[in-house]
Image 1 (spheres, rainbow, N blue to C red):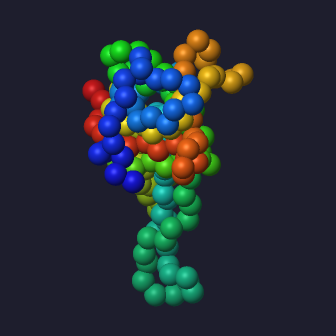
Image 2: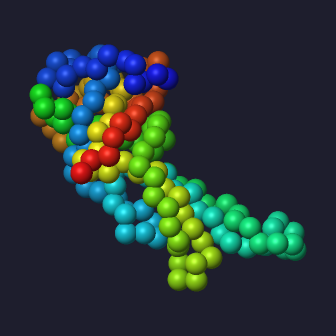
Length: 162
């Protein structure tokens, strides 16, 4: 909570075992696609609605929620002093804010989506525990991962990249 008020550390000053807040630009190693769209990002939360009749099948039509998905991919964070790896895991991730995209799904226009995204070039603030990389992560740089008091990796979306 109040991640935007926390003091930020420079990436060059990170030490293993510390819980830190770092702000920088998102640089993806691999981007993921949002299902049913052409959007590419490193994190998304997508909510899908369907235009149909109410729960009992009578009455007027309305937008009914049918699906919600969340997915994250690890990414690099650069702040001008260095680069670190953000170990984003869907189950232990808390994201506040994000660029929002909306639009229709399917050819008939009977479904719509609303998605919150974190894309390449966006500026974010991340809070996590500094550690060494494990097997699947890029070596030779430090990693921010879930841990600490809340046992979650927190990401606060600051501004959209170009």
